[in-house]
Length: 165
Image (cartoon, rainbow, N blue to C red; front, side):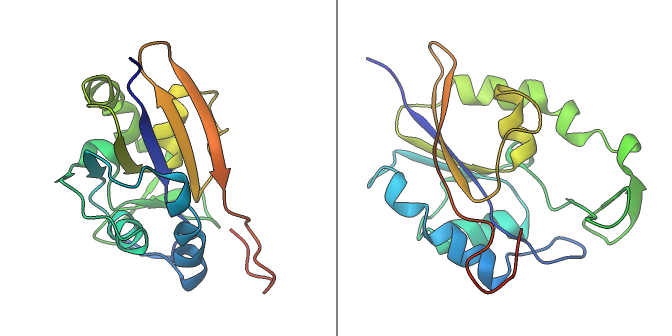
C-alpha cells in the first residue's frame, strides 16, 4: 500500500522579518483545505509565522514544528537579499539554509506515516521537483515509494482585487 504525503505551501506573506500571511494569503490557504485528508495522521510545520498562520487558516494543529520544514526567514521581493528573523539582511547567494537542511528534509519525509501533511515552503517542495516549479498556496501529493509528486491544487495569485502574489 502506498503512503501519501501532502505538502502545503503558504500563501502571500507580509513583508519584513518573520512575516505572517496577508489577508489574501489566508484566503488562498483556506481554499486548500478541501484538497487535504479529512483526518491526517501527522501534521508537520515550519517554524515561521507564515507556517503557523497557514496551519491556523487550514484549521490544523501541527503535531510537530521544525526548522527542517521551513524557518522564519523570507526573500525580499525587491532586493537580492533574504530577511532573517531578526530583521537583518544577507545576500541571497550567502543564504544557504534551505540547501543545508535539504538532506534532513528528504530523510524526514521518507520516514513519515501515510496521510501526513507538511506545511512548508516552495523552496523545500522544489527539492522533490524541478527547481522553481513549486507554487505558493498550493497542495502537492507525494508518494515516497516511487517519487511521484503531483500538484493537486494551487490557489489563484490574483483573487479579483488586484493584489497578487
